[in-house]
Image (cartoon, rainbow, N blue to C red; front, side, top):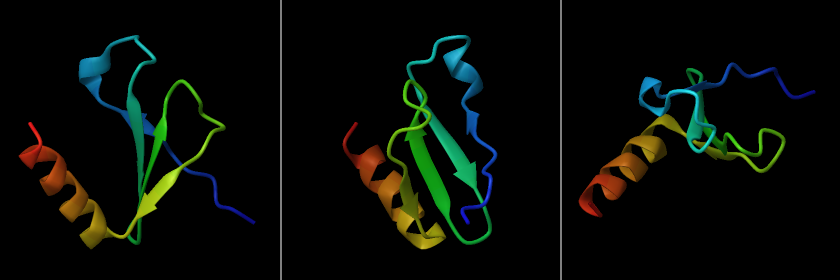
Length: 60
């Protein structure tokens, strides 16, 4: 059985559903598209998520 996740999105998005939502736990970070809440979910370990964010910041 998959545990129920608590999803959150940035306060910068306002009421727009065109964003990424995060679900954080001690052991993983999950990411999904807010337009498709039942769609695919990417999951990362804490270390992998940190590296992913650092990579995205270099792409700016």
